[in-house]
Image (cartoon, rainbow, N blue to C red):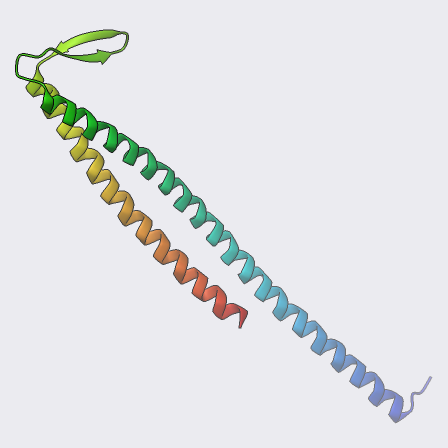
Length: 139
């Protein structure tokens, strides 16, 4: 069966159109996989940021409690009895030792809060960077 030259040209145009459509689909698939990868990274960072905020909140509460304990200890005179709860038992503790322990806890918690702030800033910077690359990908 012989085809006319017009029919052959028509088949060639159809074939080129289908090839162009396939090329567009393949480019879209690559774009989609890149987008899905960015979204996955974004969600992972959001999870880390949320965990960081949760831990930071706990440390902030502990810091407030310890500062309150320190203020109460400063109100006591040197002869006052101070007790520390260890398990189910109250154990007598020296006032100076209790002050030192509370100050060390405050120092440790403050250092942890600074570390968490640095980690949070780093995560947010990475998040913003990824967001910008996502915006560029959408253009």
